[in-house]
Length: 296
Image (cartoon, rainbow, N blue to C red; front, side, top):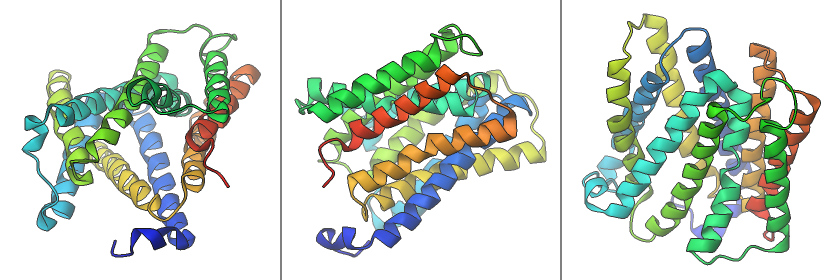
């Protein structure tokens, strides 16, 4: 943390280690959520409650002593509040769909957030979209069509769970645009805590209304999934401090790949040939959208 910004990318090994930790945690989180939803019938709102609660606790423990956490601003700053609400809703979309769609497909659809973020940034922040990014957007959207509706199979029709997952991607994109503006005035700890706070406000009432008894293993798995999500996000943020956008983006694009392959192996999730091609187009297009014009 004390290394000057101009020297951060002189430590690619440290960045790689942080990104590997992030990749492992995000994969573990997705697979645990799939197991909890499909095999243990644990309500996704309960899982989201654990994630928000443990994430908030982690933030308080790690950042409050340093004075970089200002929880009250989550209710005083409308932009910070909107980040919390949008982030909570977007995460809820992912948690709700990961059971019925499968960890791989839900993650692939959610991964298109970077495409929508580029479009929103161009409209709201007046950022330019170059030719490489434009091609990436077109390929990603073509892949999304193949993945979610144009072929026979488990996703033969664009149903309501696909729509929820896609809505989550759009909400995540909106969060990115909001965060880009918040980083000028707010700390990372405060921004992250706002999502946890509003996530609790959103999830707890739904979890309480659908509450069923949890056994010890359920609680252990829910806690593990929440820790994976929190550590994964913190590790990703730290990794980008030591790597270029292209290198860090490449690591994060492998997350849905590993989740998809793990889901096939562990949960027998299946893809038609067209869906597999669509998934690859989504990944390639998303990567070009993230790093287009920034590679040397």
